[in-house]
Length: 343
Figure 1 (spheres, rainbow, N blue to C red):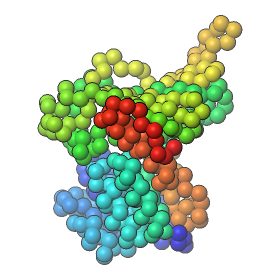
Figure 2 (cartoon, rainbow, N blue to C red):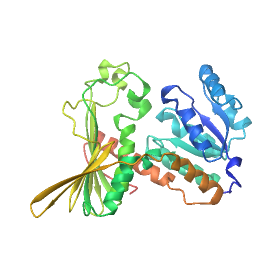
Figure 3 (cartoon, rainbow, N blue to C red):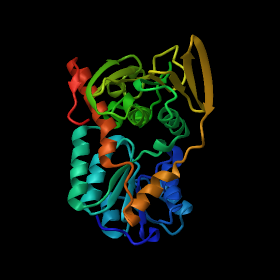
Figure 4 (cartoon, rainbow, N blue to C red):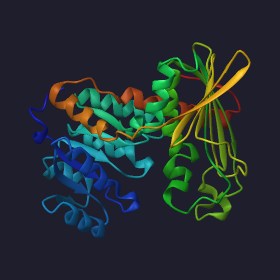
């Protein structure tokens, strides 16, 4: 891959500048902290293009991806669009010789990820996913405690999110657009879990409840599942469960529970709580989470492009949670466990 001489030679392009969470602005401001220069925005909505020029007065705006690729000097492009568009847009950018960052998830299917990875290798450019939550305070805290041996050898992770309530009518509730109920925060929880278990996965089973909320939403038959449970088997004997729900009237506390040979820990947004039993005595210790360190994502990307530093969130790492979710989809359809192609 051709090195870029200095951070200011990195020209930032963003595809998608929608109003939800103002993610386009967030991405540009965060990568600017590294010294990179905002260059271009592609957005179909003229009102949002206007907002982009108000946010960044010297930025170029385009109504299509093709026009931006043809006319702009952007050499790193961040894709912030609905999930089912990631692969198609990324392939256009990669084949045009641009480095690409995709908002998570990288794509919806393993095949899409494979095509994107192959295109990046052929063009000799970078492909990564914006897994900024790799640097969330909760996972930084949990990994510190695991590495210190506070709960012994980890063998089980239970990840869960959701409660009882009808999902909204935005695109994230559409199965065909979003990929399903697992593809939003489920991807983050899987990325946490893969760090903690630190092992190859080998098999995926999944179970889904469908059809309760979907008919009550704008998406009808294309609505997401009401709840999905995924079980993942790992090579060294550990396992992972992931549950995302809109039907649970009595949700578990926290977002993850991690169990090891010497204790267990509950992970929550403000703290990680460790429970140990020694000589019949139970000890519960709560550790406050540090601040998140999200800017480290783009700093690593820029260091990779300029200095040749090792890329932390590689495309292969990004494919791992997608391969689990894609395998889960196949498991639900076939009613059987799926042996994984990647690990």
